[in-house]
Image 1 (cartoon, each protein chain N blue to C red):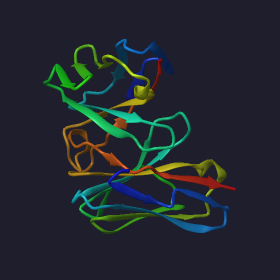
Image 2 (tube, rainbow over the protein chains, first blue to last red):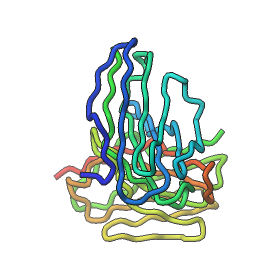
Image 3 (cartoon, each protein chain N blue to C red):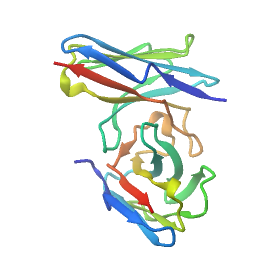
Length: 115
Length: 114
């Protein structure tokens, strides 16, 4: 088990649905991240929150909307997704926002399938 | 553009041997390099971090080297075991700050045969 908890583990949604992915950590980390990973590819950064403020948005389409209600929680709201958005969505946290010198702690992801 | 490449898509070795994985980068001057292990259907797990001014780092059976002149890191697993079979990812980061990013390499699938 990891110290970063993601729910749900699996999600199937239609292109007109609205759903949310949730992530929680209680390690006192002040930076939280969303990554997208396609099969046999490395994780790709989507968003970074530092001290509950959005600090990086990697030109992600607006159908993905992140939210950081507090320092322990991170949500990713999904709306009008496309089948090519099907992937493993990984949440991660780190002690500091400077990623290079701060190891990332990943959750086990949400496997999303868009039909 | 920045590129991080790891050796071959898959590496097959015999149990007990040393596995050596390569991470090469171009158009990048990282201050830190990290290695992660990822098992199928799970998130990456942090293994080791090495700084630009460090040549080598060890942790149990793991050893990482970092050569900023060659723009290369080598990751060694000694006395490999079938349980070491997984995908290994290198990741490069800058000096820190809220706008700096950790970029992952393409990954190497290691298979240790009993």
